[in-house]
Length: 82
Image (cartoon, rainbow, N blue to C red; front, side, top):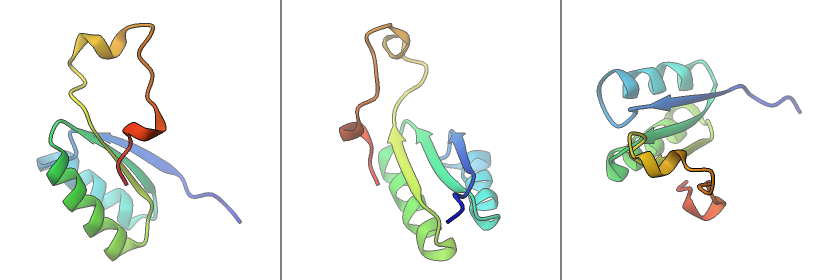
């Protein structure tokens, strides 16, 4: 089985980010969607899974937060939605 390519899209909860997610999903990319607002990300992930059959992981996170860049900060699998 060949793995599909994966696209990481920030700001995916609305606007250009959401449209990019739709375009990549339409081209059969699996997705990792990141934005501050969890609910719009979850709604978009359901739409893309149902319409395109792609894998979508969402992460509600404000990437401008300085704490994210500390050497002790790591993403745990329990922090992922989807």
